[in-house]
Length: 359
Image 1 (spheres, one colour):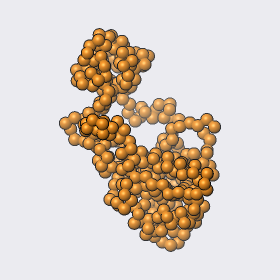
Image 2 (cartoon, one colour; image 1 turned 90 degrees about the vertical axis):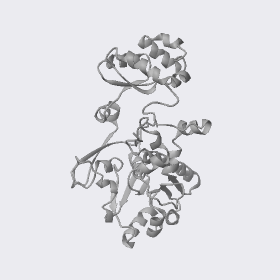
Image 3 (tube, helix red, strand yellow; image 1 turned 90 degrees about the horizontal axis):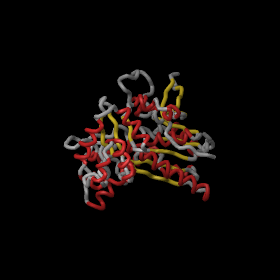
Image 4 (cartoon, one colour; image 1 turned 60 degrees about the vertical axis):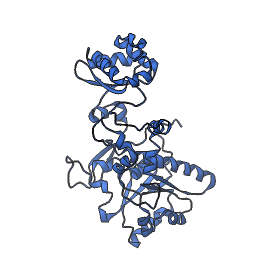
């Protein structure tokens, strides 16, 4: 891959996931990224977010290394004037500062966006905050935002308690929003020579990602309910079945043509004339009957045979992979980045960008 940002300098004043993911995005594309960590707290809090299987005396965790590849780490206490001067000198020649300081903390340390722009008018200050109102300093990790933005209410099985998503997805979404804002600000700076302050909140990032679930309510008044892996608008989509060998597969049939091909593979073309199953709208209404019929048919042969036949016919289908199986995929293997840590050990993570540019 080419390195379009090899002349870019990024100062990262952020910790946890969303902000550091933005810093790593630029590092992957060639930028010099300098991460400033607070020595009074032992650095980024995620350094201590270790699994029980990780060495207790290691200065980093697997979680930390997921979004902190290829960065220079400086431990500076920004309350101290001597350390703050070091940071300010870096910021005077930086292109981007990524921060998730609360407003009051930033003011106290002289690291608020307006002052940083005074130090460097061409600077793009990328500010992450929890809520839309920058004065709302309520602490909010990803779990809080999953609840606030409705994800937690929707996620899980019917008649059972809500279930959180297994990654901090709101942080990931906010990181993507902030990257987009920074790229727009960089483009504007190329044209005008002026820097900018861009702000992204975790809450608004989550709201912007509600997609059809929000529009379902806005247009019909329907409040999304917990449906497990099922889809409120499509059937069979997200429904899980087992072959005769007990191995699970999941269907994602999104078009009438795909449903026709599914019926052909299953030898159940009579379903195409059955008013209960003949349209997506009917299948959504009669989801239970559809799933019972599909489940009975899938149990007639081994899952591997079904997968081969369905994929050949162009029906969206997959087995449910463990993380080990996922990371053994050739595509995943090509995305693994390695780095030697300060203690000499080798850490591994997946790169954060998934695109390829042909220039």
